[in-house]
Image (cartoon, rainbow, N blue to C red; front, side, top):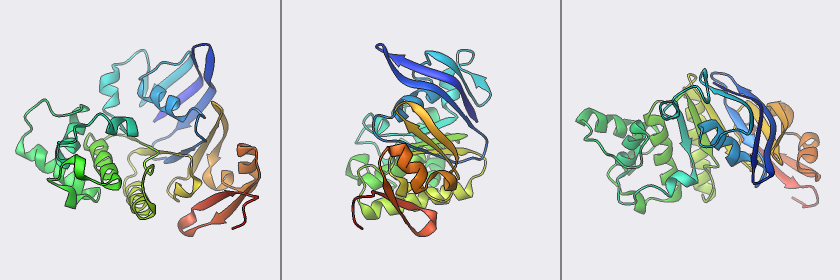
Length: 261
């Protein structure tokens, strides 16, 4: 699906990412775990071609950056992020925002056919948002907005779906509802790959069988999630002792070891 080969990114004399090597195969679902400031957002910007590596090579869906048309390639990458949400028109209905994903645009600048409107509504329904049809974006809860953004990303039938900290700002119940929908999506679609970005280990569900740990702009470790999300590895990763509590569904909660649970 994509590959980073010895990728560096430097900005204003600072090295943000250093020697990134990462390969994701078709059908693999990965979690990308790291603290704030670890370089996760920069990594995603490189993957989407919004910034260019200072050194190294990036290929996505068989195309090498610098040798392909990025606007067309981006249509195969669905990116759900807080930055996108801030660009949307609050007065647009949920299905209008979903339909805009087909054209990779903010807003609609074409006259969609009735079948395209029906398709957008069906994608929204499949994402768990049937009750959102006809509602303007501005009145939706944060959890409902995330459902709309995910449906928008799926509208273009992407081969790579990036969920960039999708649970930020959600309460406990909205978060669990969204994670359940993401788990269903990961289980029901094996023709694309999901990259789930977070700094909370308890959000990583069983479908994300691979994990990359990013620390200070470098790959600390990558591989099977079950082999990386343990107290020994994570204590080295965070450079502090941690305690793990196992949750239903194979998820884990992580706490500083000096806090009594």
